[in-house]
Length: 113
Length: 115
Image 1 (cartoon, rainbow over the protein chains, first blue to last red):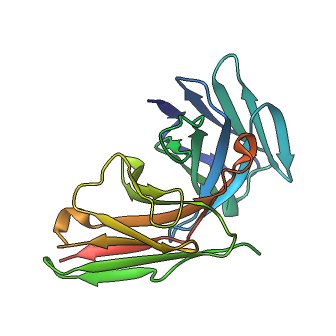
Image 2 (cartoon, rainbow over the protein chains, first blue to last red):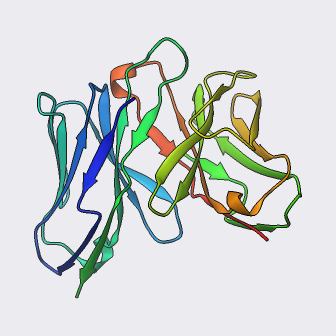
Image 3 (cartoon, one colour):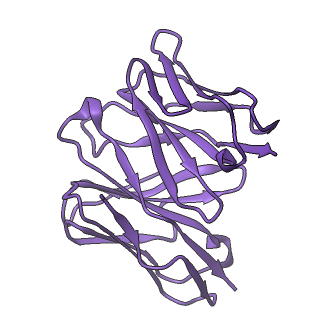
């Protein structure tokens, strides 16, 4: 069973700061998701990546398959980036059932004006 | 715009009631999932389904059952609700057709309180 660890658990920063959230996992994966959950509960998929780097606006996600590690970066952070960020490892199909996700516990980010 | 829709955002039920949480997706996805999310524990898989009428237990199936009669709809059932089932419930769907690029889509969540 994959173990997915995120750090930090909580992060408070000032507007404009560069933010990094880390995610490590214990066994090989097909892909890794970064998810954003705003107060109220709905989850939005930010990225899904299986190698290298992806960028969308001020968000950048990187993954190092050999080191089993991924990072989510936010440049020029803004109060509207305040949310819980969750990484989720997509486990390879085992033959016993549908693909499944193993989630980290999330990073609660607060950006203060 | 693709959608996973959960029938309720907030529910309050009494202990012992039978509770139905409904999830509908419009993406023709084969896989559907039910998770619960609790502080400090993250998201935990309750049940998943990879086809109509098929279901598999996740990590914490006790006290729950599911129904998948149609491809687009996956229902979570609490046969006799208990206070320890107070939680946020999230539904998700994905397609396994391209396993290297299987993206999951989530509903908006149902916050269930059992009193």
